Image (cartoon, rainbow, N blue to C red; front, side, top):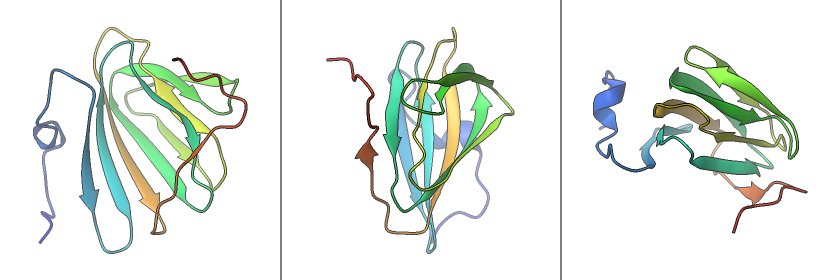
Length: 119
């Protein structure tokens, strides 16, 4: 059974590397991310899913398309509807903590069109 009340920083056990903790419920998928400075969640799309990101700690550059990005910080929320490009680069000096909720299930992920992924 899933915990109904949790402390977010305590839910991310790994502190030395970028890390994702998966939390599943009956109707959605929740990702809890710790993104280290200088690291990414590469831009991508979910063809059939919403992906809502709540920025809990840190700051970074949120991709709104393969070429455009906006600065986000703790307290901001970003909504990607099905087919919207989204991703994040941690451009700040501290870890970013992001809570994302994806729905409906199942979740599918595809690369962002026209984004040049680093090698």
